[in-house]
Image 1 (spheres, one colour):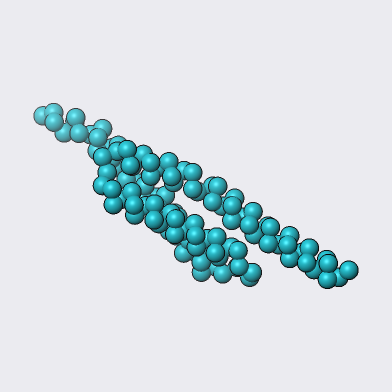
Image 2 (cartoon, rainbow, N blue to C red):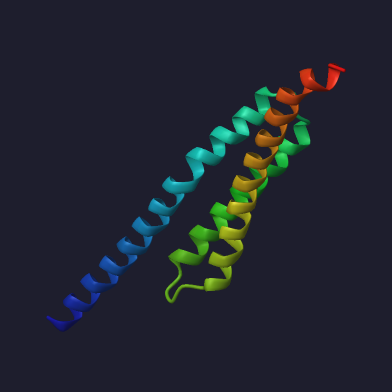
Length: 111
């Protein structure tokens, strides 16, 4: 009976780790992919799109690896969130600066 309870607890802990990893991805991936898409349809260099996409992919893979371990390896989680947030913030900053420069371009032509 105790062995059965122990197996059930291990399965439950594994399922909870998987749900946390999925929930974390559900928070960051859609917005970051949308921002990368907006960069792609803007006149941006293709290497920027690839770099942001690669950072997001590596970040999510590291996060899945870090969370799925028991006990969790926080080095993977820190590296993964750094890559994910770097991709999200870089994409946001690029789009913001592109929008501001496009809005200010007509004003620069007036004298």
